[in-house]
Length: 212
View 1: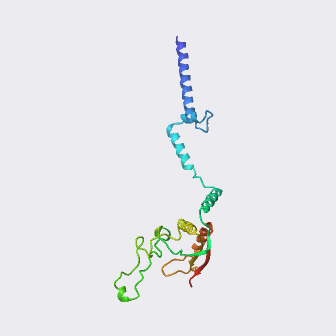
View 2: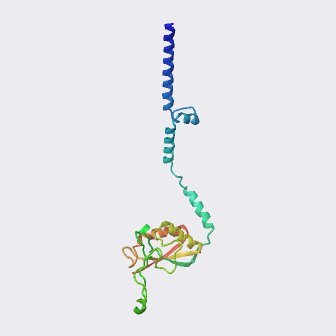
View 3: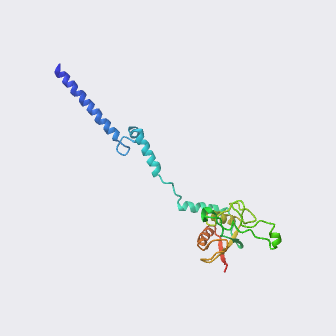
């Protein structure tokens, strides 16, 4: 009888040890460590570990980037809806505007209030500067708001509008390097962006007007 009890105890201990070892092995499994298939493996991973792996997958995922060929095809399809640029039609294009987002302040939108030439008449009107964004130095308020000429999206939209109107050539007002008007900033380093945006829509830049 005692011998039977010893055998039973040994069998129970061996069974408990086997269960413990199997449990440890199963808990340490991950989808990369097993050959049981992804669904079975995922059920073996504790919920907390599975959530961590899902979060890592989301963080490491990179947004899909548009292939240049696809972008070119889309641009070509868009161009087909535009009229052909008429290189006999010129339009003046000024690149001296700025706002706090791109320039740190309003540029040219806050132009000085122009006084009347008769001092007696001028005395009856306010003086100082325009106060953007509601009060700007222009007779008409732009649909894009008081934009910055350094905003790539604004340049893109302007070129698209010009191409839609069949304008073919832009006459760009320009100051040489280290020069600017009394109300603006240097714009010489902005010209390459304008040239690239115009070229994208097959627009030409006429010899810029140089104020000396």
